[in-house]
Length: 208
Ligand code: ADP
Ligand code: MG
Image (cartoon, rainbow, N blue to C red; front, side, top):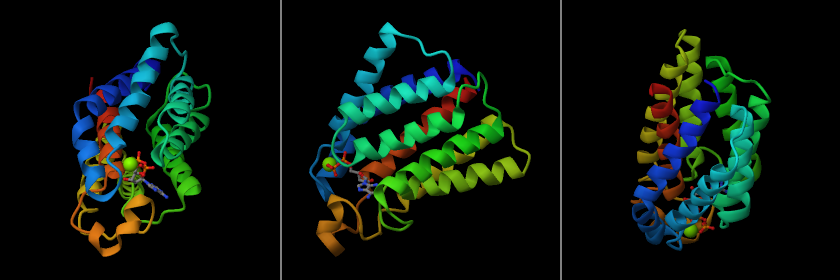
């Protein structure tokens, strides 16, 4: 997976976030303050604007541009969390021109570890970690089974989608939704859903 893949991942993430902006903010309205779709859309628009003026020369440089832009434009809880995710992903990718399946698993793992380091959420706390951790686990299993990079990314996307769905009955223990206590149950976590969209974008970019 080279720079073209990383750029296509970013483009597809920007497109899917724009398409689902109202849905993501609606999810956040139910258990938060209703800004998640706007927050992320503002961030990915800024990323696309930067990519108009410059073309990164590696997957790592692409992920770094996403990281710095999201950190400075998204705000809220999710900006620093996703910014850290993409920053750690960029560090994992380094300056390699191409990422093989093992390197892609390492990138996803680094992203998840960054979110956990920053937000201290555990699995089951009803956050974006509940999409990222199953995704990383599924990607690692696909790699261990000898899967090529496309199957690793598809496994990650499918697990992230299932992980996001699984947040519905959970009671939030981190972030704004945790203020609702038991009343947070019965709703999909917006950050888990947007993370699943970004991971599906990564897989779709690899499938071409
Ligand atoms: P805010 O809550 O500041 O309005 P957003 O609405 O943009 O920020 O993002 C909310 C999402 O952030 C939640 O749906 C959840 O997935 C994620 N989130 C919040 N706190 C944490 C945390 N400590 N660790 C991981 N994810 C978190
Ligand atoms: Mg919010």
